[in-house]
Amino acid sequence: ISNFFSSNLQHLAKHYTPDGDLFFKNIASFSQKIEKSLPVGKNITLTPSLGAGGDFEDKNDLGLEQHSAYLNYSGGLNARLRLSRQMNWNFNYSASAITDNNSTEIDTNRDDYGLTKGGVEFTNYYYLNTFAVLRNVISYDLRNFRTTGHVRLSPLENELTLTPINNLAIYIRQLQAFEPDTKFQGLQSEIIIGQAGGTHLKVGVFYQYYRPNEIDNSFGFSFWASPKWRIDYDMKTTSDFNNQHFGINEHQFYIYRDLHCYNLGFTWRVRRDLYQGYTHETLFTFNLKLNKPVSRPANEDESIFYPWKDPQNN
Image (tube, rainbow, N blue to C red):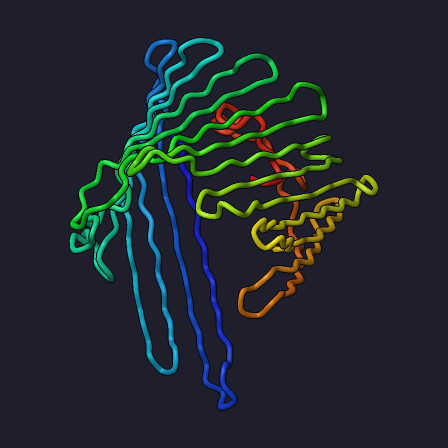
């Protein structure tokens, strides 16, 4: 039996008027999930799961206090079918429900009758050859709603990864909608030259159907200046063909230092804000080294579904 547990606690307090009015907010959450893999023959594995979680918030804004607590319950069944050495199918049913505020009972007054998730998902992954991997995903929402107009069939997600030679990876992702209308929704492509966890250069292009005259671009590089020092740079831009405009949305500079048993990191980030122009952020990280400083070993699902995945991006 596998057990997964996570928790989070945040506290925010600040004076936002000259009179010293204080705003504060406390947020806490937890998540617990257990699952068990049950082999059925040589080619089928069933994995049932059960889980529970909670979100709690305590807020005071200009003397107005608000206290909220929500619990959620979840469960599911995953079935993995290995058709051949090159092809695998995965069927997953998952459901989750949320309670009313400060209650343990399901909030049936919501539009979704308290069911925040309830549907099936199908994934096909196929190894075309030694350097090409194809992945297709589509899901269907089985929930009932009080209102109409909800899309039940998700867009078909198609992913193709090519690694024709060493130190070269090409990633292509396309979304195709079928409900309510058949529509080409988006296209993403990225080229990585070098090793994802080491010295590399990457260039990406992104297109979304709701912005037909714009294309997002990304550029980044990373290298080890020495066995202990690592430098990363990433930039995201948008090209507007109607207005013939090219703008930088975000760029980030990151330095990592290996301190034997600890990790030390420094990040300088600039982001474009629609209201404030550009905002600057400076972040420092210092923590105990529990695994590899940059990469981490992928779990079984990641190695099957995303054999090309960059470990640094989790």
